[in-house]
Structures are given as C-alpha cells and as structure tokens.
Length: 238
Image (cartoon, rainbow, N blue to C red; front, side, top):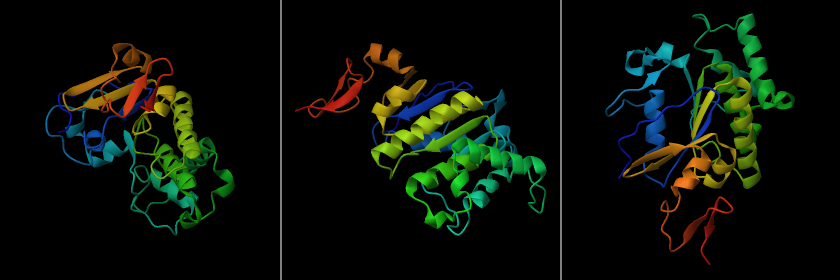
C-alpha cells in the first residue's frame, strides 16, 4: 500500500529527504512532483504556479531532475554532459551562449570535478558519475532539484560524500533539494527536513521534531530493527 493524504511544503535552501519503506511511493511521489508522471489527485504548486498549467519548457526552468537510471550516452565527456543542463535555455540549434558556458563552468566548480571534466562518462566511477549528474542539474539553474536515490550503488564513504555535497549546495545556492533515500541515518544527520512516508499518511519536520514525536519507532518491524533516540540512529536488535 502506498502513502496517501500527502500535504507538504518545501522551502528555498532546504535539504529535504523523503524516507520510508520499500513500495510506499517515494519514487512515485518525486516523479509526480517533477512532472514525469501525472498526479493521481490534488495540486502541486511551484512558485505560486499550478504545475498542471505549466508547459514542459516552463517546468524545465523550475525543476531539475536526477533519476537513478539515466538514459544517456556514455561517450559524452563530463563537460558535454553538464552542458546538456542548458537545453531549456539554448536556441533552436542548441548552441551555448556566454552565459550558458558560465553556468556550466560554475556547476562543475561547485561539485569540484574540474580536474576530470574532460573524461568520458564510461571512464567514471559511480561516485564521479553521480557528481556529474548533480552538476548537470545545477547547470539547469532551477530553484528546485529532485533526486531519486542519489546514493544507490555507492559505498558508505561515497554515500556520505554525495549527501554532504547536497547539504553544501542547498546552503550555498539556496535551491530546494529534495531526494528519496534509504540512508535514514545519514539523512537524520544532514537534512533540514524529513518527509516520512507511511501507508497511513505522512509526517514531516526537522529530524529533531520527528525524533521527539517518536515518528521513527514503528517504521520497521521491532523484532529486528529499533530506533535509539539517544544516538539518533537505527540499530539491529541483537
């Protein structure tokens, strides 16, 4: 069963994690917000505009999207990949203006991948590829960035590195960054707000607010996993 009755708000400069068990609807929720799939019901308001009234071109200037599986050519260089983020703004032949090139350079700099920007995508590690995709979303220059499981396929170090990068970007660029994740312990440490999706509804708030409510006590079956409020983390029951 997927979550319903969702009513949330996301503000500029916030890093927001969407968490919950498998199958509760995290990816569906993010794809609906971003316009990848139609809403089943309700309204999505972006900068005081109803999303259903926005064209694809208008939506591309408001939301940038990083999906788990990216349909792209691995023969592109990082620089070429990041430049694709400027498609909503280029002319009909797709040539980059001076401003476009500045946005691409700035995005690569923010993610700190200048030294490998000329590498081909097939040469990249999973962590480097994820940074390149984040840079492409930054180059798109939207107030909202949405990422679906940005740390999947990464080891613990690179999971933390990517989420720490998102925290830094939300603070420095004032973009609202929303991502679905199973890395709840990391999200508790780094995020400004959590959206906890459950079949009977959702809860949202800062990590501290949700901890104080006891919101994490019943996410997983208590026979195996428990939440420790003192360490603010999930542990395996032994």
